[in-house]
Image 1 (cartoon, rainbow, N blue to C red):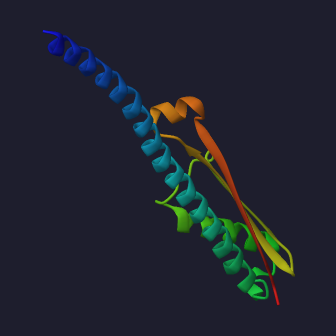
Image 2: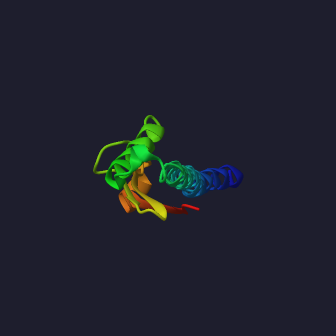
Image 3: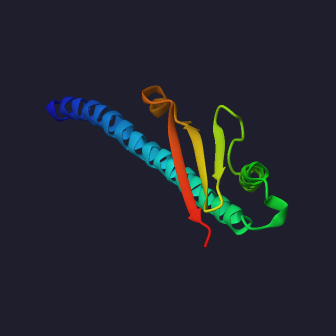
Amino acid sequence: MQATSRMRSDTGASTVEFAIVGTLLLLLMFGTLEGGRLFNSWMLITSEAREGSRWGVVRVGDPAYSDLNVLKSDVEEHVRARTSGLLDQAPAVFNVQATATEEQVTVTIDYRVSMVTPIISGIRPSFQLRAASTMRSE
């Protein structure tokens, strides 16, 4: 008789332990997934800022781009075209700014990553990422 009552109380304790440990493991797993999404977005905007500044600095001496405002807008359009389908292009989420001089081209990308996991989005709904790259014309 005593052995069966002890088994019932152990069964309830293991259910409670599983609920606590399972919740922590799920939080850790989803946190890792969200961290991976953040890292991927950061790597993508860093790469595209570098590519945009490289694309622009190659065209600094080109007669078609004697007006630096045209070069600036073409660099911004080039970066938007390369990230189309990879990043959300909404103006509130994705912003590209390029500055161009005769010596250098700088591209800055601001991107807001929204969290998709309900628990994590309750703590912090989004992260603002920024990447900048400057290439000199030589």
